[in-house]
Image (cartoon, rainbow, N blue to C red; front, side, top):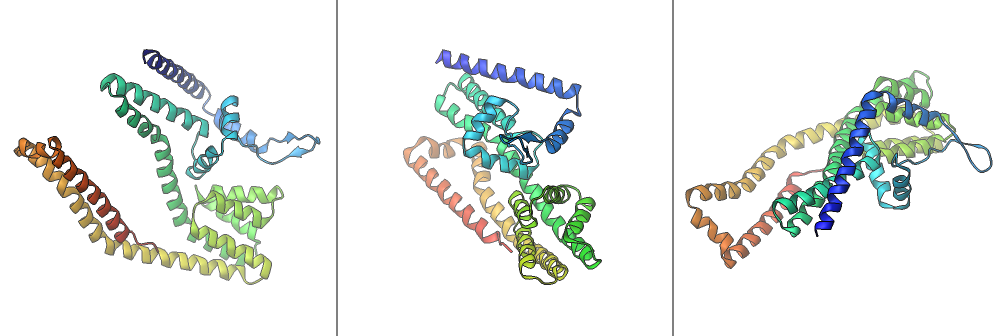
Amino acid sequence: MKIFIAIIIFAVSIFVTEMIFYAYRTMRNPDRKKIRKRLKTFSSEKNKAGLPDILQKKLLSDVPLLNKILLRIPGPQRLNRLLQQANAQYRLGVFILLAIFLALTGFLAGVLITGNYALSIIIAPALAGIPFFYLCQKKKKRMEKFQRQLPEGLELIARSLKAGHSFPSGMKLAADEFDDPLGPEFDETLNEINFGVSVPDALKNLADRIDCPDLKFFVISVILQRETGGNLAEIIESLAYIIRERFKLYGKIKILAAEGKLSAIILVAIPFLIIIALRFINPDYINTLLSEPAGRIMSGMAAFMMALGILVMKKMVNIKV
């Protein structure tokens, strides 16, 4: 076991050294990332036939060996999509290495502090999930912002169509007027169209990149209009109106459900507050629940029933519009 701990310490030391060198290179050349991003956008490679290949090559890590490993595994593809939706600054390999580093550090710290290997094994994956929890939260905020921007963007496209502009020109106006996430995502869709991708395929790629049901309605409407005909400006304008009205209805429901959420929080917090109070007032009374077998069984049943009640109350107050 000492050899295993020594291996973990060695791996953590190597990772910390690499992170220090990476931070040093980034501080010396802060524009390096922007330059590499622009070069990657406009660069083209030659395929076996000698023709230019405009398809973007997937790069999940700057480390060649790690990139090959990640490309062969099916799981990291979903994580890479999460990075795109969260608009993360670094590649997937950085977050995977950070998760491994946190897991090893948590396991080593747990072993050295508590000496309990079972507890250390529980701590390790919990710390490893911190980077991906951060990505999920960042993605959630970005998608919520996109939903708020979408009605105004659709109205701008509809007005440009009424003024006589084409659909790509209307999307260009929206891309120029809005910041992240709507502006850059529309701009990337326009770049795909300019490179020869058909409008339906480019819109489908946009819907795949953005986890927003309202955007899917917009994509389906545009594709159907291009196949069957109709007034695209009125269709987009009606869709923007429906989205705005849905936001109003969701706001009303959120206000009406606020009392239920507050009641749920109070009901969940009361047992824990009582336990804390009894720990100070009468410690022997509350210790019976942890020392006696019957008390542990009752505590486990109470925890299970509380978790079930939390799920039920969450379902009751979480109304989807």
